[in-house]
Image 1: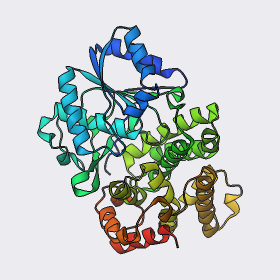
Image 2: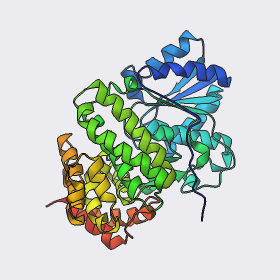
Image 3: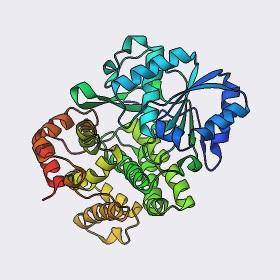
Length: 386
């Protein structure tokens, strides 16, 4: 039997006001100067200031690299490496959702493993030898869980593709999951990132490498997300705090067991059209669940139960599978997610190329149902709508 590995942050802080713990962590670790990796919008709207005010009050030096954009590119990572060197920094504070976190991971790995400076050679499971520069990851969205995963995703704009990097050396040493840092998220982003978290939990629960420890976390995450996402989108503070926890709980799990073809199919949508990752996942999730259902044993019963469906123990297998898919679809509709690929600007003539790209994605191999290009094309076609 192969040993099952589980990698987590050294330390994480949760709840309102958790961001203040950043000061004790900097002091105890002896850090001297931070490169703050973020995007210009988070600077503009005062989110980054919540951290820099703490640093300034404690006389900690920092510089800001705010050139990160959604679906960060190879070039964004390279410029971040230059910014880190120019700043004379010895650690990073990544402030944001998946894009700043992923960018910081790429920077941190390359600084300590300069032979991967081209960025693209980090694709897959790269043989890096040294741990990343230390990263304190401050989440501002409740969805990607990038603050606790060993994965990051970079866009190769030249080849119009996204590639996934899986590296135990890149996990942030400290994660800060503070719902106050997420308060400025607009409803649409709250919905999209929340459905991204649900996708992580469902794919992590059904992926080929899933086992009891990851299942425990993912089922609890589905339960938390199902009861709190609607409230969070409506602006409820308690719902936002629950979503912050739910997305982190599944992050701990899926980071260690992998995902499936929802992500395999979503990544090309971002590469082709710059579709927000959470939206791509949210639209595809129910269609892929229908595709995977015959290969999931009794797992959809537990998904339906965690989604709040009553009476699942009295249902046939066909009934509880449909109930699970219906519950996911209803949640998606309730929080305003588009229901077809056509609605988010996907072009029908691209479906064949998208299917080829999905088959090359590292996440696809973990799918419970074996995938072929033809099968993936058919799922895209169904999801495209009439």
